[in-house]
Image 1 (cartoon, helix red, strand yellow):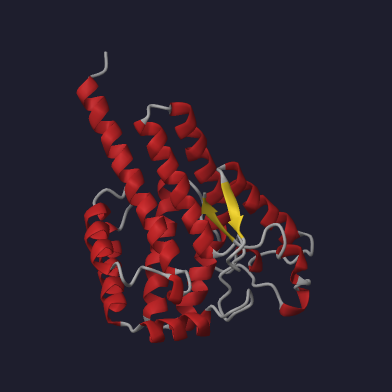
Image 2: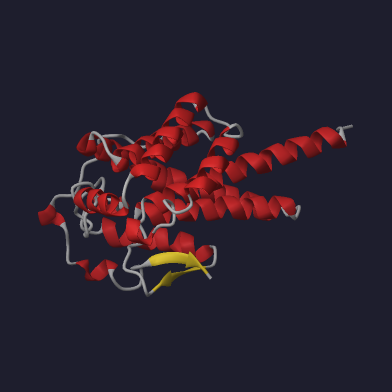
Length: 258
């Protein structure tokens, strides 16, 4: 017969670990939004205390390395001006999908003409299945790194809520969706994105952001048994890019919870 006390402790630890993961995906999402739209810099005291506290609950290796990168990133965020952050963001990530370092999933990998609309539709279907709709007031594609990280955070928070309500079936649905999305999408291309960003930046706020995101995504994939993507995924050539009309209609925009 199981010990109710031990079961409760294990459940609480699982929920805390999930909250830590969700919070961190939310943090990454904020950092990869355009700096003029992010609250990350304004909320540094909140993030600093919470990230360092929650780090102990991450079920991943190299916690000390991640702690060092956290502290470096927090320092950089506290000391960079918004103007400098905007300059770096726009220089490396640009205003279009084909910036120096593309921040969109579908710019990485195969170059077949049919792939982009198919993949964007697949990503959008993930969002729609969990009650998200396209926000027509924004101009971001559904495969932007910030949007995908935000979706991961949402799935994890939904799993936590289901566990707290003792809805095991719903929790499993959320968990399976998160694993699938990480395996098929975010975990497949984010390592190549951060590797490219680290190579291009060398230093600065965007370099610090890429360092933290890179080690976390690799270790998160490792912990839940998912193979993270290759670091050398090809970038689609400019002359293979089709007219953007196919991605600027039903799947264009940022998904946000209603």
